[in-house]
Image (cartoon, rainbow, N blue to C red; front, top):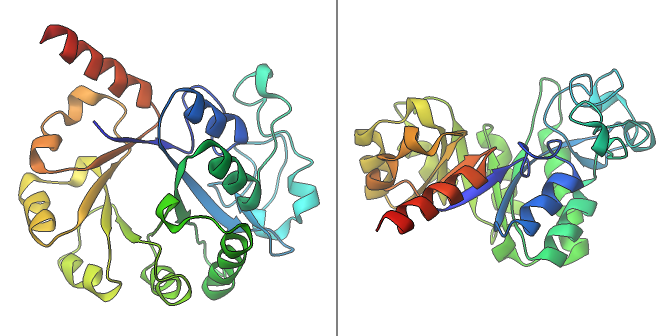
Length: 246
């Protein structure tokens, strides 16, 4: 049962923080999924929402706040007082932690209206190249085909996964356009027939965000390769129970 910790182990620590990523390593999981967008001063930062309102004590649009402003915010207290010193991490900080802890990172290129796709991709590349991260540690994903095409040009050795909620009719054609490695799809909208077609075409399938292993128990038989979940520990418990029963 292969799992990716969605925004880190976000059921046990505030999402997209170094604490959540450290928790992933401590618990022995190999993969984290993160969301990357640009600050006002064009620094790639790790945060999901367009604004800081939900996951910090601040207000405002991420793209309109400089890194210093973003990192002055408390990104942990909303989750628990135990995490009140957590900050919004940069991509650089996150990748250094991943490198030091041998974590693999699914970098979702997060784009909102008016964001500059090419600039974000260029800045992500700069960080990766500067840190000399092994390409085997990284995977790009995005809902934006244009972003993945750009990364195919900038860093072709790093595999690419196309995100979608519902599989489009031309889904397999889109995957061919970016020489994709994987499909990242909403687990509730994937069918056995679609999974068979995707696997037959040679792609990996990653499902987001099933938090109950029993709900997707059949998916492994469909050929699904990975579950991107807030509760990776639930899959560990499920696996241990199966082994114990056997």
